[in-house]
Amino acid sequence: MISVAKARALYASELQFTTRMRSAQLQAAFGKVPREDFVGPGPWRVRSPWDLAVYWTTEDADPRHVYHDVLIALDEKRLINNGQPSLWAYQFDRLDIKSGEEIVHLGCGTGYYTAIMAELTGPEGKVTGIELAPKLAARARAALAPWHQVQVQNADGASIALPPSDVIVASAGATHPQQSWLDAIRMGGRLLFPMTVTHGSGCMLLATRRTETAFEARFLSSVSFIGFSGARDEDVSNRLLNAFRRDRGTRVRSLRCDAHPEDETCWLHGEGWCLSCAEVTV
Image 1: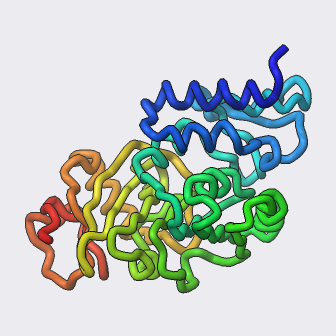
Image 2 (image 1 turned 30 degrees about the vertical axis):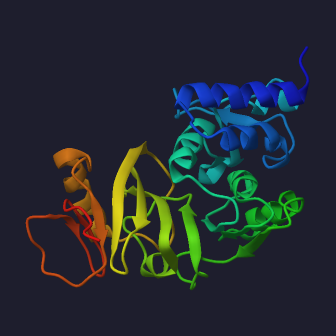
Image 3 (image 1 turned 90 degrees about the vertical axis):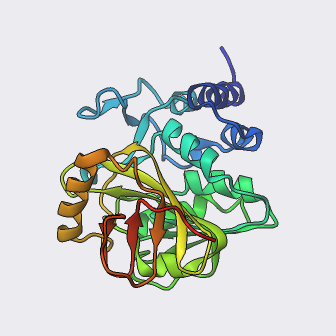
């Protein structure tokens, strides 16, 4: 029987293979961070990505059970889970977090993926986890104690001002980027969040600031997330649904923050933001 450490290493290796992960540092982070410290005591309620309608229970509390590409329930009644590892491995690999960067994780839950990002930025960096649910925030604060570069706030990430950041990651679905998120991103910084419709899925958007008023932007993959309280608008959701039906976001090239009339390059035009089919001009 293999050890927990060996199970963790095999899990990280499998994530590297299935996501075509390019970053050795990211694989090492998944191979180091103890997921069992972030998901509560077992046995665990889990869901496979192949049958998201059903939770099932692990046969016992052996921590090796958590080292599979499954969701693990944090609050089953509210459908809050520790997210699918391969999804976040894929996104983080493209986010390309560098040593010393300052990161904000919105909707950090109990902090597992916050810890992965803390491993990537290292002790020279800084990570702020923000979680609306007090109990989850308390669990995250306890589990993240070994990472001294991390602090956890119990707050609403859609309504508070954020510190200047190199990276902002949201772990809940928003219909559109919030102004506070855009304002906080430094030049060259990245915003990663699931842009989702109210009744259905969406796509993960990665936006990189290139000018004061423009981000290079691409949709990375289809995703499903619980809604980000305070970061949703029903009218935008309806228009986003229609836009996804047209082309699933394949034509999006930039996120504009400048005031401009809606034109043929606007994929989805909003107040203070616009996803555009035009490339960023630097």
